[in-house]
Length: 340
Image (cartoon, rainbow, N blue to C red; front, side, top):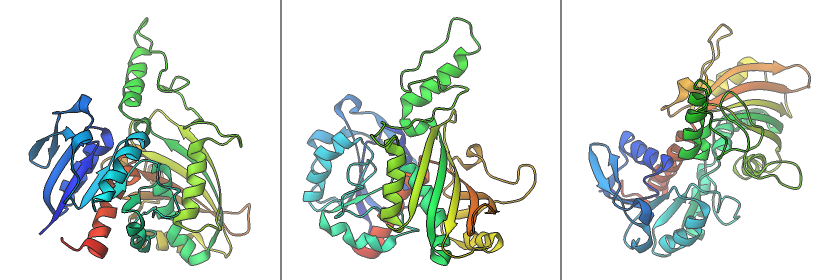
């Protein structure tokens, strides 16, 4: 037994990570197809010990396939995801295209697994934004205990969230700082990213927020609770992989920091590392390649009546994208398809 699985966008950072995680977690695969655009046609990708050549997304027939993990942009998803879904293949989409459609579930399995039942509306399931995914894993168990009123979050997001060109830009700018005449002008970002931070992710909206900040607000409400007020400042930092977040939470009821630690210590998907000593916390470098969302620096906020602060770190290519998509596939298999 097993599933016939398609990975769409298999040559990109997230597509390759999906293949790695499917292999690591021993997802029950009966047959695998890896797809890419024509410019990447024939590129080889690895799945465990096996190498696959990419097939042409434009001509691929999704009929008879069970699950398609999409790791391509919104434009390609808009064209091909409905075609796949129409054949009966369930699409798990990593782009932002379907996240805000009320008929399509937006799922973080540790947070709102019951939403999987909505998949049949359009045969499509949305994967949340990377910065939202790790935050809601931390918020949900605390919300269940004390009900969250308001969240103030500042993110410190790695360049891998912008793709390979951004990784290359950081690397080349960093090298260029040490070689006179080899400076690299910004192309991916509006300003230099090496040795700098940029308080700007995605486009600016009329409100003054960026779209990344708006996404965190809208997605948290859809995934956790529409009554939660969220305000965000999203910042790009010169880190290759791993997003960090400083989260301030205001609750309806008092929640002691020690109880909060116990809740987080036993919550699914979380690893608590919170020692009040030098190095007693997790940084992005340490979270790379890990499945967990790491929580540190849990402490009372004495400036408000029922407040907590915490530090949240996760591998954005994993929990923020590929891992969450594979976890959705696992949930789909357990709850609905049941071929595994």
